[in-house]
Image (tube, rainbow, N blue to C red; front, side):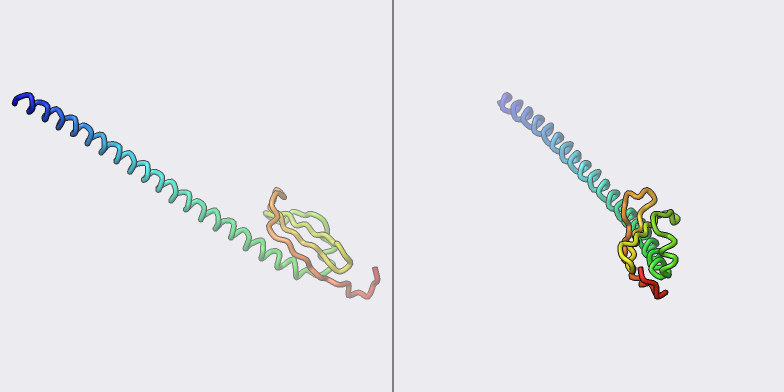
Length: 128
């Protein structure tokens, strides 16, 4: 009878060790999930901030390009080619007698921000 009691006690001790191991594994899984969720939230906030910066930059560029579209033909002619305009590079081309292509690039010319075509007919009566 005594041997049965000892075997039962040994099994109970072994079972309590397994339960402790299960708790440690569960806590590790929860910790990994928490760290992953925190990293995802941080990345989400970083992405939102980056999108806000890009949106702000494009709004500024759009406002500047809207002003460029109001320039008279003489100003467009005078500024043909690439010119630095603050944080941007303004490229004005003249593909046809009354059409101007206006492009706004970032300062490194790596990214085209905005592009537009401007119709500006010659009103002086001269023929090309």
